[in-house]
Length: 411
Ligand code: HEM
Image 1 (tube, helix red, strand yellow):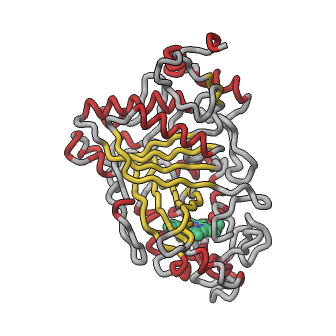
Image 2: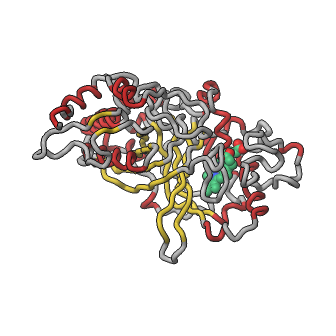
Image 3: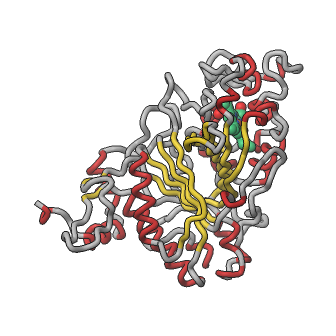
């Protein structure tokens, strides 16, 4: 039986030669098109690896995610390039459906067995982003740093543990199942272990639609509703998500995006003792339906002009401060792609749960930083505590078989 399975060399060769799509299609019979993000059931099983942009940004959130930040231990520029090429070929391989190569019982297997021998793409996306650390003196890349990349700001009310912040390189690995994401992480780490050392890691999940529409966060509210406006609106995505070269940015950033990750603890036991009315006034939306407090269904656009004194939606409500919907903050909107996390209990026996807040921005300062500054003293701050994360830059996509992640930085 084993003789029917392909060899490692054959599979890696096929993936590198770009036959990945054909293999994936054979496994899934699905297309990657999906413009009703977060609202449908399970995202399509296979996303194409090549394109102007990386996968894992516009695609609907999958059910499972692992965020891992690394320190680069490769000594020089050549070695860094090699590491990025290896990352590229490994991700191309992993996001493709395949029969696991068989090299005999005496060999070390290329894959770890976690997913068995016949592997479907399972909605896997691996998004590679770089942190400010990559652009220090080590690799001679100082002059091509995305202009706004820096150590993550510490905002008032943050309680940052710097051991859980920043990093040289971030992997955002998402899939329909957690074992698929963890398997990918292990294969990638094995392929790059001489060059990448883990700094911090966080695993997340999204809920299935309950009962429909957008998944819920662990405060019980639908989270991601406002992303709907990006669906299928390419002009809006171009204006708010993809960073442009020029105007102070190096040319290579074109097609990438500022990738913000904030690890935010939620004091859920404290929150659960608050009345639903008060919870809704803090968020500004109905907990059950997700509708704006002045509206009737989830995707109604709030009209705060009709409620100038905040009688229905308090002027301090999270959504109202985040986006007053009066035209003043239109260019501050961001594509959010958060995941819940649950990590056991803290030393005091309190549940350690929260949100891995994630957003993609064309311009870090104009979007995330401006909105976060406005949110600084919102009432919700008593129930949450940001403790980690970082500012990263999601690299532009891999355009063809000769291309590799980050190549533009070395041009
Ligand atoms: C634990 C922390 C947070 C919780 C529980 C939370 C919760 C929510 C909820 C329930 C909504 C309404 C549904 C939706 O449109 O997704 C929302 C909207 C939003 N949130 Fe948050 N959020 C948190 C952190 C943040 C942060 C850190 C930012 C950015 C700095 C942010 C920015 C926004 C924006 C821009 C909207 C959309 C507002 C609109 O266009 O109407 N949120 N959030």
